[in-house]
Amino acid sequence: MTTFPRFVLLVLLACAIVTHAQEMKRYTVEGDKFSVLLPKLPAMTTTRGLRKTDRKYQTQRQIETYVDGLLYTIDVYENVKPRLSLNEFFSAYKEDIKCDPGGERTVTVDGHSGKECSVSDKDHPAIAQFFATDTHLYRFVVRRQPDVAEDTARQFFSSIKLGKNTDGINVTDGPGDQIVLSKQADQKARLLKKPEPSYTDEARKNKIAGTVILKVVFTSSGTVEHIHVVRELPYGLTERAIEAAKKIKFVPAMKDGHPVSMWMQLEYNFWP
Image (cartoon, rainbow, N blue to C red; front, side, top):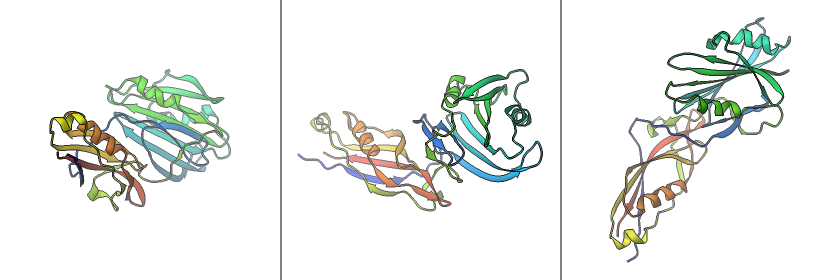
């Protein structure tokens, strides 16, 4: 007998948020001549502030995101005249993050010399790298929880690109890839396409009926991520529901004029 699984979409009201490793994507800021790999769209704030060394006004950006025990921070400063050298920049800005004395080393990215230091904070150890060009000053920092391996943080630094060939997803001022509940969004995610899963032959043979429940995130970039199985069914039905969820097309939720990610609950009902 032909079966017609039904798709029901409910908003997840639970407040707990669980993050898992995600695919890294390359991000940049137009005109700032750098790019890096990050696990999600970061928040960014742009201001006009005073340079520490001589109180000259400069454009300053802070770009930041947090996932899986790692806090990624990128500080970009306009290198106004008189230009700061790498040593001057490092000396003036390393104290903000309390670099370990004597724990410095030289690094190079795309022909640009830089300096690296470590921060031996027992709760949030960190690594920082500093670079100076004719137009910009960069400070890249990764803070991690003690149970997160340093090698995981190192992957971020190996992804840094400096110079002209720094294409990526453009970051603009805003809250970044927040994960919000439906009631927190100014405009909820709008479905465009919601494929239905099909039965497996084995499930039909065993007359399996019931509901697969998934908790997922409809991301600000239009993909379905963080898929967690709340209730499963045997004989491949759970896997069919996950496959269908990944194919959902939607317009992302909006908050404060920016696209944001939103937790959703998906229910796939299978009735023989």
